[in-house]
Image 1: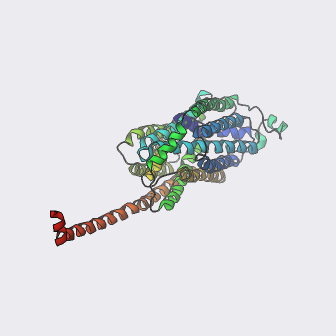
Image 2 (image 1 turned 135 degrees about the vertical axis):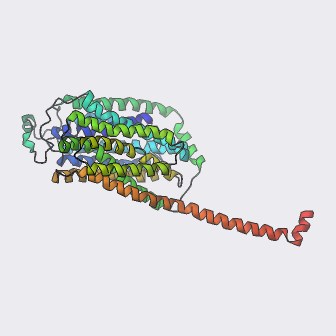
Length: 445
């Protein structure tokens, strides 16, 4: 499962540093190609709903193995797409498969450890962050870029500026890209994913699936007094959090090159700094989860996100501030998602469908926010729209969590009141019993 999430992080984060190359490949600019996020997140949305249902009725390892094979096929296909429609379709298939892997990994961790699984949940999402950290290094520093950068990042760029090979075959759906390193970057990650799927299929001969089901039934179930309201608030919470995380991770490379004027290698390093601090703090959170409550970790993450995003907005032209605030922002965003899952598990039991519900909220944020930001950034190229989005999202998450906490603890307060009332009744009963004449005779007998 951890190996799955490493490759999940690599395949998702690979889009950021290769976004310009893919735009050049399909004869589009970045603003018009932002619909690619809608395609990926739409697939993620459908995959979350599908995975939440199938995980309750299908062998977990078979489902995850098939999803990994589908991810491999999509990654092999993406660099060869020559039209935006085909590219969006391939990203949709990728989104469906990656959502099943995401939902399945969280469900299996909760099924195995329940409310004691905070360190394991942090380790699971650390694996994702580690993969996301490695992806920009693999895409831009290891394989490099051979095709000319051009000026396709500018809002006024016209598709006619591309080479004549794209004009000679306007209806070609697939073709070899000008930059073969783009192919190697996607194919190498796809090959790793295919290798991991082989091990998942090998687990079919084990009895792990039945053991997992028995573990779930043995754990019992808890249901918060406001179970549905909590899930809805968590849905909105993850909508803003995941939307901001993926927006920053996907657009910081393009933002650094166009708005700040960084070189591509330096911008790729900045992208890796974001995912690197993200991964490092998720790794440290494995140990912090032993001594800190999930709610405490969420509060600390919200404060760090709010402060760092505020500094990013105030000093958006400063490269030094961009490096420092990006590091802090990545570290602050690291533990929010796994801590949120572990936090709600303390108050109410999460089934596959419940997990899929707030994962759908995350996928909607991944779909809506980056797509809107791509359009707005094209219309207002002089404004740091990406940074404004991160600040607004940090404000929303900072306000939402206290509301969620109050709603989750209402049941505990009612139980305490009920318990104290019951204790008073029991004491009163035993007082009258001890002072009753028939009770004293019964006691002597």
